[in-house]
Amino acid sequence: MDQAVTYKNNGQINIILNGQKKPKQDKIEAAEIMAPLPQVQEKHAILKNIEEEMNALVGMEEMKQTMKEIYAWLYVNKKREEQGLKAGKQALHMMFKGNPGTGKTTVARLIGKLFHQMNVLSKGHLIEAERADLVGEYIGHTAQKTRDLIKRSIGGILFIDEAYSLARGGEKDFGKEAIDTLVKHMEDKQHEFILILAGYSREMEQFLSINPGLQSRFPLVIDFPDYSVDQLMDIAKRMIKEREYSLSQDAEWKISEHLILVKSETHPAKFSNGRYIRNIIEKSIRTQAMRLLTSDRYTREELLAIKANDIVF
Ligand SMILES: Nc1ncnc2c1ncn2[C@@H]1O[C@H](COP(=O)(O)OP(=O)(O)O)[C@@H](O)[C@H]1O
Ligand SMILES: [Mg+2]
Image 1 (cartoon, helix red, strand yellow):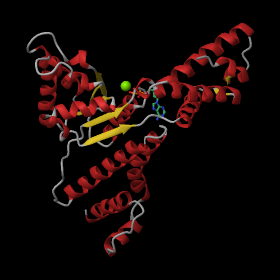
Image 2 (spheres, rainbow, N blue to C red):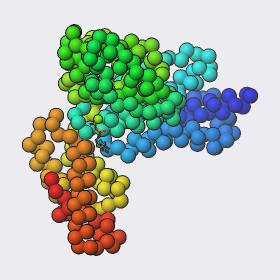
Image 3 (cartoon, rainbow, N blue to C red):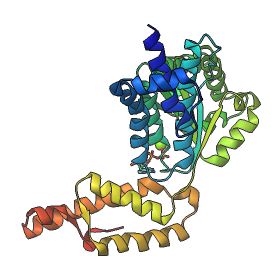
Image 4 (cartoon, rainbow, N blue to C red):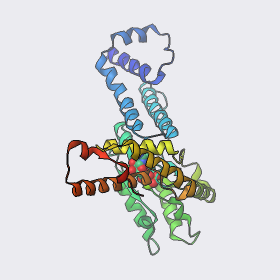
């Protein structure tokens, strides 16, 4: 019994102090030496797994940092509970601000998975919704539609894209009813599901300013910045690799030059970042397939290679 407790203390040091100085407590230090390795590794595994999954994503430093903080906070809370101390119960509802294709949906899905592993969510699934899924056609319809969506999200995440559009019609619009229903349930069921509102930065800020009560209900606001050309190229290479293709040097240059041009000509809010890259890659894969079919050559090398001619915009 005594031993089990010291093992836990040991785990705490390993995760939380994270390279910082250990407290000078003989009991803990002795227990640390004695601790069975597998248990320590297991505790590291969740954090490591989280970091690995996040590292697959280019950039997003703010999001990565926030996730680690949440992990540490949850872990410390558990330890505080074990010591009979007050464990804070913060809500984890979030707001994601950023242009199209900056990874908001991707991250929401990942967070569901991670929170499931961290035991915060019982299922970790993602329900994606937009205005039309929440807003109904007659009085009472909206509240019912919104409640149904929340019900389906229990144990996971309710992700509402372009959430600002709920405030579009002002006081008389049914969107207001959807907001009120969401607010009520995000309080009442705050530990049963996580609500993520997503949308363009400016619109989301405006949305918050006309609904002052909302701001404090979203302790976590995460920015999703536009990607630089280098980051977009990084995303392109990862997508190519993941699909088991390879990009020739010419093809790479062709994409990169094109991105510089497109980014200089397109308003940032209209450029779809990662999605734009995904479309280029998927189109190039289809073009390559046509080329191979025409030439009737299917060596391993040919099957892998995406050449400059396969890149079409
Ligand atoms: N940082 C990133 N690293 C790798 N791929 C990304 C990244 N951000 C976005 N993508 C890819 O770009 C596409 C669009 O992302 P998505 O999450 O749908 O953006 P949003 O929801 O913000 O519009 C997806 O295929 C996603 O995998
Ligand atoms: Mg999205």
